[in-house]
Length: 237
Image (cartoon, rainbow, N blue to C red; front, side):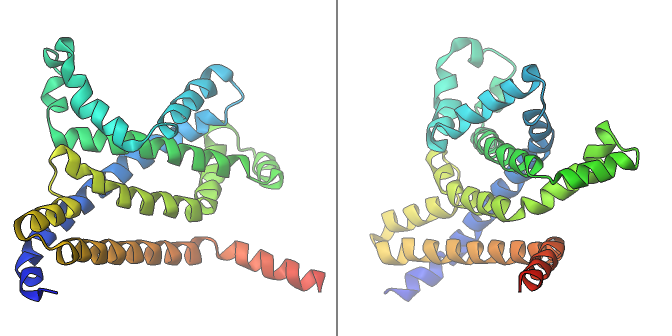
């Protein structure tokens, strides 16, 4: 183990961590904002509203993220109409294409997570809210969505961690993330253990940190569910 190479490469890895975290943050923020209204549409009894969302999530979840990224970054550039359009200013930018691919993919999975949580809402909560005169937008904003988002935390944490791991493919479109730095260090020194070993440790620390954050959130917002489970266990005893 050549520790000198590892220490000398640390500034490069810091830059890669910055790229990874920025890409993860903006992709999660945009996908979350898109997923909430799409999840509401997904559970709508109106087929003209729910079917397009179902088709969107079905296609995006049914194809690999790497393929989606290549189609956006490399595939669209083959069409002259795209290159001559105003959108080309954005589509020729690797950052934008990576953000778009990660956002669309995460939106598909997050929409289904939130939609599942909405469907799992107890009828008693809905009836109690309607008894207070809540309906439509107020019913969703004050009762259904807050309740569903809390219940979705465990599944959403898996999506966040999965997306963080998926950012490793951003290096395929020239972004200098953690994986790209590891590849460059390996190419310069031909030391696989030192280059990718450091990357593995960084990803492990990031994963451990994200899981810890979500555990704290679950402890804070799902406390009532633990109380209910304890009460049910006592009643059965």
